[in-house]
Length: 114
Image: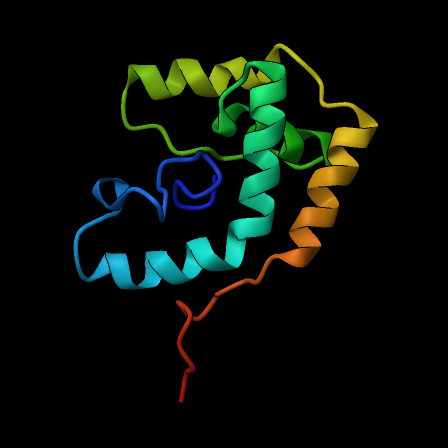
């Protein structure tokens, strides 16, 4: 979800997980902005025994939206499909919604556009 951010692909505490320069500059800003939501996604994933991607995709489905997840290999496809075998509770959706409202969006890549 979200360029790999909500899938848990990147972690500010693990430099080896970050993309190479120059994408690393904007990715750091995206991760900082999404921290409240990513923290909640990770918590629910751990509670449920699911991946961050599965929780993120399921959340989108629970919102009545058709997700278009990224998929670079068979393992990603299998993981994405795992989002279909459970439903988040109303309380979990509310937790994600609240965390989403606390997150910043960087539609400009985190930089002011002139």
